[in-house]
Image (cartoon, rainbow, N blue to C red; front, side, top):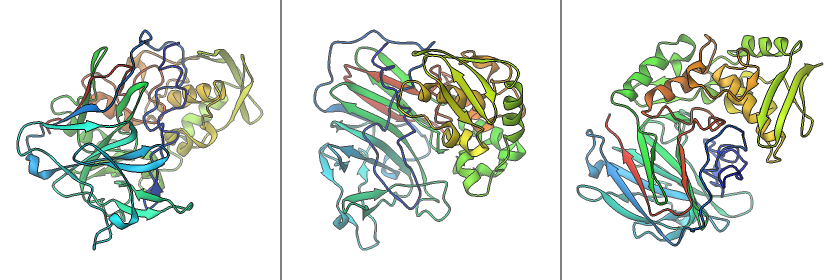
Length: 401
């Protein structure tokens, strides 16, 4: 197993980006995929990440000058919520940081022109960018009496940042290396790419020319998904759309029912690093035998879109990886056509009428075909995720649109 595969919690399972709630980005904010078979791996590196990491911000939007781009680096370090200052140091979140308007101003200004050079300390969190207006982060006190931040929730109409053009990338940087990704799990707004140099030179997340507009158009033309498009500002992920009344709660029910019916009479085989699990629907549960016995109740559309609920993935090395493969198979609509999972051929993904058309559009929009369109998009390495155990620099680019 590579170091990547030893990190078995999906990156989204512990990220609680809830509108109106104090959110602590956890130490695993950008965790690597579940331990799955058939994923590419890198050889183990003996080098270790040492000290602050050079961070370069490049504004290539072509539509917004540097003076209109605002940067925020927020997250967790040593069990507390922190932010990065323009000088590259960590500062704890404090309720006293709120200004007269009730919000903090943690914005880091870009250089007057050209690239902006910063320094990233050990931490886990998010790099937010907003265009035009600044983001409103509110410092609050959590249930334990500790200072915490309310993060932007662009899918919530009452959120103070709903009208602001913004997006983010996620990362964990520590002595083991840099683990980072772009994400569309919650929404898609600003095209971002990340380049990580070190033992290798890797780039992911780059949206192809015209890809943003094409993604907006593709989602809008599917009637069931059309209300997820918010003007030219963002596309809301269907799970959040469901919670907001913009997406049908039973959209995937016919497909889910057919999967349940089909595998009452034949086996579904799922291979993970723990071994192969063979499952059938018995009674009201999909039960798998193999290295361990694991079972799942019939998921709802919401469970599939959030990869949670009946498809929740504990960090146990058995149930978790099987849940991840099921979640990916439902979102990519490959479970009926491929009784051997995970499916690794992207040409067969999203091939049915009832599918996650949002995620399909996200993958179509990127140059390398990789995106985080749903929580278990890391199954079989189709997520916009890169890592390096001996990093020398990280570059975040706001690409043209």
